[in-house]
Length: 144
Image 1: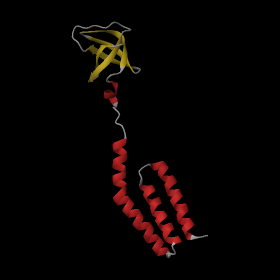
Image 2: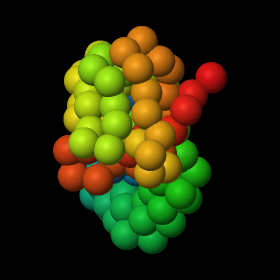
Image 3: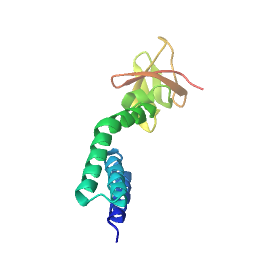
Image 4: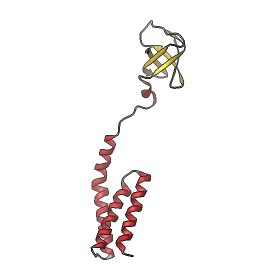
């Protein structure tokens, strides 16, 4: 068996391992293994193949990986989490909401609530929209 095929097998295994991690590190090593394979097919001795593997891997890990990671992460959409994710969501009044507060169900959880507009009231069963969350209180307005 030609040594170049062993390098190709290593490249395939490293690339497959990248699918489990997703940090782009093993993918860079896989490209290094392809460099070792190319050196083997060009007739380089084992030390030359290892040197090609090391050079390609280091260049890619140090030079290319940070740039690619930054671009991939910048392309991901940002998602609101925790209470910020509730802003704009609909809810149902569980206990009448007035100046002294009340209760509203939002996304399966019950929150204390008060109206956005002073003096506005909501009866149990009314649909509301979450304007914002202040502490553990949902500030709500009339919904659809």
